[in-house]
Structures are given as C-alpha cells and as structure tokens.
Length: 419
Image 1 (cartoon, rainbow, N blue to C red):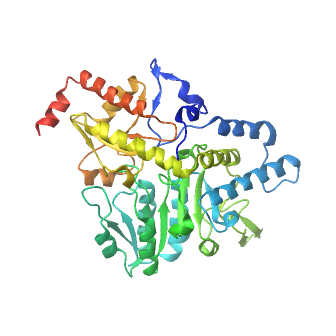
Image 2: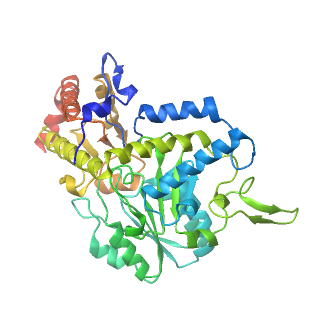
Image 3: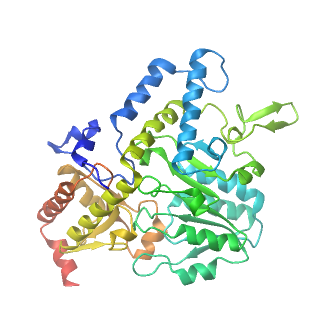
C-alpha cells in the first residue's frame, strides 16, 4: 500500500524553491509540515468568499462560515474515530493549549495533595510544564516512567508507577526526540484499572499513523493541524463527552455562555463551553482539506512510507563515522523523527552548515530538556520526514554531513572515533 511520492510533491508549491542556490530538502516536519495547494486554496477561498464571524450571525456569509467550521469539526472527529465528534472535538490554538485546558479545567477540579500524575521521561515540555504548574497549585506529585537503553518505556517501571494514587497518566504516543512509539493502549488499561484517566499527547502520532481514540480508550487526546499538512494556529483536544460535560470552562467570555447576569453565568453546551471568543475560523476550515488529503493517501500508506524512509535514514546515518543516532534502531518501533549527533560538532553549527547545502533540519533540545539530560547531551540534530520526502533527500543529508566534516577539518569525527 504505497503512493507515488513524485506525484505527491507536485501538490506542495514550497518544495519547488531553492535555498542558497540549491534545491530545498525539507527535513523539519516534526516541527511543522508543508501545505498542499488544496489547503492554501481553501484558506484563500474563505477570505475571498465566506469571511464572517460564526455561530452568531444570521446572514448568508455567517451561515456559510459556520457550516464550514462545524463540518471541519466533524471531519476531525471522524478522522480519530470519536464517538460523538460534534461534541468531543474542541478547537484550540495548538497541542500546548489543549493540554493546558485539561490541566486547568480537569486538574484543578480533581487533583489534591498526595495524588499522582504519571508521565514518561520523554515528554515534550508541553506535556510537562502545565502539570508542574497544576501540581504546585494542588499539591499533587509528579512521577516519571523510566526508559531503557534503547529508548523504550520500561514496562516494569510503568507497572510500579501507575497505582492507587495515580489520578492521570499523561503520555506521548510518539516521542519527538527518540521517535519511540509508546504502548498507549496498554497504559490506558493500566490507568483505568487504577481508577485514573489518560491524556495522550498525539502531536507526533496523529499525523503519521492511524489513531483510533475508541480503540486506545484514552480519555483525552491532543494534537495540532500544522503538523499534518494543515494551517498553523489550530489545535485539537478530543475528550470523552462525559468528562468534558463535568469540567469547568478554561476561558471565559463570548460564545461559551448560555445566560449571563451581573452575578453569575451558565455555560454553553459542548463543545462551545471550551471555545471562548472568536476562534481561528479560516484555519480551522482549511484544516478539512488537509485531512481529506491524508485520508486519500491512507494513513496505513503514510505510516508504511515513513517507516521505510526512516529505516533508510537510520541505516545511512549509522554508516557515517562519528554519528550517534538516538532511540530505537528498528523503524517498526518508531516514527520518522530521527535525532543524532555528529562527533563533537554542536548541533547548531551543524544545522547552519546543512542549511547552506539546502537541507533544513532542527537543532537544539527540542523542548525536551529532561530527556536531553537523560541522554547525557545538551542538544541534538533532528531530521524528520513526511509524506513528500524521498530517499534521495536522505542522501542529500548524508552528503551535507560530508560538507560539515570538510569545514570543521575532520576534527570532530576523529575525536569521536578515538573514544
């Protein structure tokens, strides 16, 4: 089950540009993906033909914009197999805001001193800092599931950490650093047996593999449009309807109310209780064709293409003297974010040299500083792949590493090899 990548690439205008006189090789997809023409055109169409505020006006433009916005909500819900897509999909600005919504609207109401919040040691800051803040406010305690040497969660430690004091397990489905795919369905079963709820950070998983919230049986799932061909500024929070109904609002203001007096207010029904003020209407509407595009490819095909390309990249990188690749080496156990270091070169220096060769990667701590310390490094370089990437672009990355080696006089790789 594959597709023709060369045909796919014609749908992405930005892939035709040059950088520093060389063809763009875009390998920073874990940060944000490029957009197909259908998404760009839908955004323009809204502003040229439908621009109006939603849910309030009775004129034609308002009704058309509202219908398109709500159709996008239903499409998102169906994409992840939500049972009640019209009520269980909340639009936010990004994955970070989605997790903050749960931390504040669920956490403040349900956590108390002595309760435990369980994470993995590979969490993105977006799934750590909101819970640190809530723990400070409620007296709850943070606990972390440890990793083994290959970058997988230690199952024995998960069994030890998830227990009667656990109130929520907040876990990434796919690491943005190690690429590791975590067994979130099994973790959800452990959490539910302990009476806890489960939040899955799906920022790196939903764009790259089939994700079914009813099969996982997660209570919450957070992800972003911009990492899956859609516009920036659109986040998604899926929540089970029963949980969302008893949660307090996250933000107060227009749209999220039924009745307001000087003394008190009653809140709107789901999902509007959590969508205060004018939302990002245009970009939510333009998210729909991004989902259409992925569904036309088939998420199984997306996963297969990325798995093969990731394995090709790992094998190629490991043949380069001085390169250290982090995370599982078997692409069936991981996604397409491949982090590595090249001898003693700082990843920022490496990224600048690669950019001069037309190759775009990410360098830094990837918003995962605790994990960097676990790995014993300050930062890493990261190449990450998506539906339009090819093996020849991996070859371009390897060639660009050669350019870095020439610029820095082989010193870095020689020192690394001597260790």
